Image (cartoon, rainbow, N blue to C red):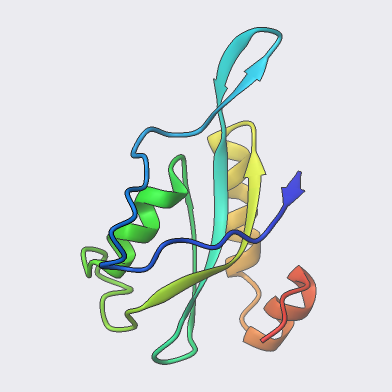
Length: 114
């Protein structure tokens, strides 16, 4: 499991982000990776936890207001992400993180600073 924080281009920055899901090489064969991510609203400070195969495209959708649960907190930024080999592993981790109801506990457990 790899934990790293990634910065993304902001809306209207003119930076094009590739839409293809990331692939890693596994013994010469491309393999899809899946992400669990934690977003924080810059407007409200609230968090959103999700999983996806294409984190760049998903962040664009959140910040474009096309995701029902996050359209009122725009802009969002990624404060944490983890990679997994299978979607089921990513979803299991997503559910575990979502079970942590306290935002303070979530930040401490993931090692995220405010």
